[in-house]
Length: 175
Ligand code: NI
Image (cartoon, rainbow, N blue to C red; front, side, top):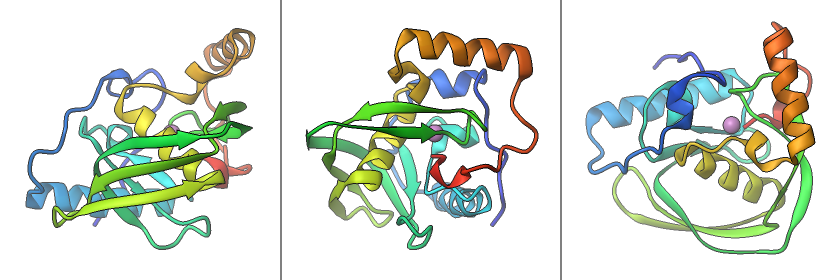
């Protein structure tokens, strides 16, 4: 088990569409263990494989208290509804937060590591985590989902200042 370095905005792997996991090999199992360690180390509640440089449709999520880590293989949102806007952050854009409008609830289907089908319903923050992490699998970042003015402001800020060395402030919302 190991804490992996989280790829930051600008790394091309974050913009790639990840490929499905065909088989849960020992390498994939090790990757999941490392992703869980990394998520906890970063005090995140969700982490997608591209964020640690693996272009695979794989994510780990924790509950809202940061416990109960679970791996989801080839996750797909099959149903969603409602709309809610809330501040969002991303471990790949440390220190950057902006309001993002997303579905209020989702139903997600995936496989667990043993290949068993998993169907999860989530609302509020957990629904947001699912949508944010699945976006990562499609090469989409939360700043793509904010209005153009806010996005330009964020991009200018990153260009000028980079990312804060200590971006710990409300990291709990970073996905
Ligand atoms: Ni993220």
